[in-house]
Amino acid sequence: MGDLIIPNEIISSKIYFIRNQKIMIDKDLSELFEIEPKALRQQVKRNLDKFPEHFMFRLTELEVEMMIAEKAILSKQVLGGSLPYVFTEHGVLQLANVLKSKRATQVSIKIIEVFVSLRNFLTDNLNLKLEVEMIKKKLINQDKNIELVFTYLDELMEKQENKVERNKIGYKN
Image (cartoon, rainbow, N blue to C red; front, side, top):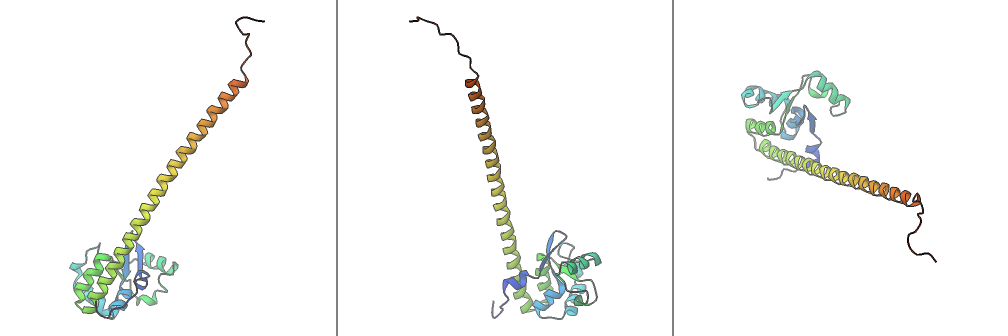
């Protein structure tokens, strides 16, 4: 990939979760692609037909306020005064195709790799959680079975204690 060195941590710190999707903001992408945010937006506007809703959408005022509150965005001024475009994993790839620069292609490949590693991490995490839940269920069932055994033992012991001495049948000395 040439001399492109962008740590995965930098890319992953620019991935946010909105509308149940992992997204990246146009301003962050323009930084990574090393182009002006205005130029990026112009290219997107010229090629809107290549960006369906599940590739790219604009944030609402409420979503921007929420991101500011969560410290994901410092302020509205950082966004350049307009509601930002945000891109999903597929949108990032499409953006590189639209921008047609070597840098955009290299960076988008790196970004996609980070998206994939995040997805793998989440899947692994989910599998771990499911396994832990299965173990918990087994332990709960075992606890219930052990309690049941002790209850039966207590009942047996009570029966033994409450047993009345009967007269023995047979020869007496």
